[in-house]
Length: 245
Image 1 (cartoon, rainbow, N blue to C red):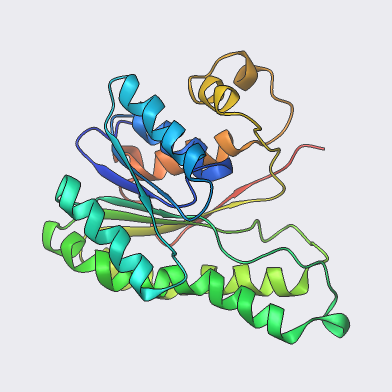
Image 2: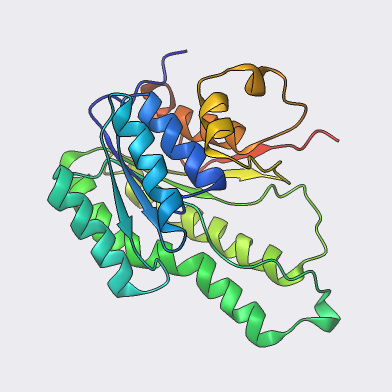
């Protein structure tokens, strides 16, 4: 299947590690110019961008707090300044993991989780959609949670559902302007520790072929499909990934 993203510019948040890093490497593999967005772990983010550029791609790093209006504005400004367009935005980091039942939930922490899941969407959509609407194309993808997974974290689950609901509510309006909105929803994801392993998986080397369960690369491949021409008519979807026990 051709997953080419040639000619497109992708903003990938949380791209210094984990799902974000694998997604940045994979979209670069498919020809996208990549904005490696991060809030912490600058050295790791620089390493991701350096790998992409040293292997013939184009990438920049942008430090931005996605939970603030100013941070999101800075991210989009830098993407436009360097590449003059944004075709893809992958919204990754969100709330924290607090394994508490409803009768033991910390209300302040729970509300902060909900805010952190929703804020990047609410701040970024009005910054990105007007230009995407003008060009009659674009991809907005958020990383959610597999709805079949029953975790003990009531607040986290509720916060992830908020993200899913926001995307579902927006997708019809976006589709009328040629923009798709989807959620990739993994369950537990096996961590890829090093950049070297992330690169090997993104290039479908032995670490990819010999994996025994879902990794961040599986999530990245799902994102790449949605960003490609093959995924042009998929919108308002939740694409679940399951953890193999």
